Length: 116
Image (cartoon, rainbow, N blue to C red):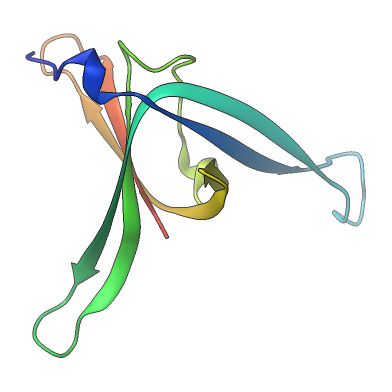
């Protein structure tokens, strides 16, 4: 599969993943795990859904995390929806996670994240 050049992936983000402490019977204590991910593509752009006057903002930015360039290559799952991403001092929330898979190897090619 043809890949874009690595020079396009110069951004660094910090992922803040919130996990509830399983030993707490009330579920009130939580732990935040921070992971710095280098060589990603962060594009500030507004993504809309709907038509005419019934449009809603779905995302304020998109992030591409590519398996061959991003270090570390983080495996995003449904549990990452709602996690925070920090980029250039601004905090965003993950709304949508799109996973692209290579057709012949069934390996994850990239993740495209929509953040708001």
